Amino acid sequence: MSSKEALSLMELHAHLNGSVSFSTIEKLVARKPHLNIEHGMTAIRSGQRRTLDECFQVFKVIHQLVDTEEDILMVAKDVIREFAADGVKYLELRSTPRKEKTTGMTKRRYVETVIEAIRQCKNEGVDIEVRFLVAVDRRNGAEVAMETVKLAEDFMLSTGGLVVGLDLSGDPTVGHGRDFLPALQKAKNCGLKLSLHLSEVPSQADESELLLNIPPDRIGHGTFLHPEVGGSQSLVDKVRKHNTPLELCLTSNVKGQTVSSYSQHHFLYWYQMGHPSVICTDDKGVFCTDLSQEYQLAASTFNLSQEDMWTLSHKAIDCTFAPDLQQQLHQKWLELQPTLF
Ligand code: 5GP
Image (tube, rainbow, N blue to C red; front, side, top):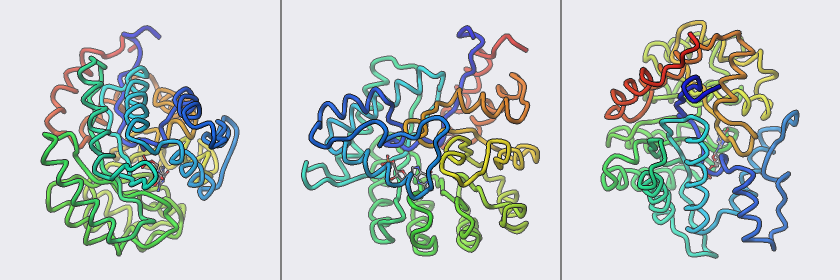
């Protein structure tokens, strides 16, 4: 495809440390040879499958490699440049602030460093707008979640709108969403947008019922919301009532085995209903993919035309957490519309 024909893309669900590419992992490994980490430990290659639990072990390995401000800066800049090279014009990156005793990195410096990476890419002329969501890892409990909301609020106010929201993620089998309600409500009240991983595994229907009442501004995965897979019509109705967009990550769900095959992916259920559905990568490094590949997979699996794909990426603009950029992005989409249709 020529650049005129290539799709312009919107990435709304990308975890920073899950997005680290092979070449960046090589640079990190060279910095820390004593860890004896090989690429096979940080990525799930084509044809491979892992349980969700095994996927979460992979993140722990990557976290060992990314434990200084210098690492965070390099990783975030590389990830931003790679998304831009793939045709992504707007990226919402999310990450869990981490404190590392051994290197002296604090959670505040962690977020500041990601913001610095976003600013440096902008100054270097990388053709992409980037916003940041501060992530709450559910494994760390309610108290840490509340502290994280405070941190996110501080940065939302001090960065002139680069921090736009809060993400709830981490191992879905740990803890219950009710514990996070006060923190999520506080985040919403102070103006942070909420993207919540919901119904990623079958046992989360009660939790989703509760969290959908907030309501969130977007849903990550939502794999088991609909009745055909053990969810319920009531859950679907709540999502429909608020028109809450879904962030859908095909390869992540297939490789993580929460979805049995591409053709069984719940993308089709929501897409056929005309519900706002945004194709995303989740963890492009861990799952060895990129966003244009995810669009191609959706197109070949569900028989989408080039125009359908363009419309999908165009509609994602209305689902961003940066309303100030939407008009500019719509304009860009019209200018960059491929000549194929
Ligand atoms: P980080 O927050 O360190 O930048 O990115 C990795 C973290 O994102 C993981 O430790 C995990 O908390 C979260 N994460 C990445 N992918 C997924 C996913 O598919 N589901 C859930 N629930 N959390 C994820």
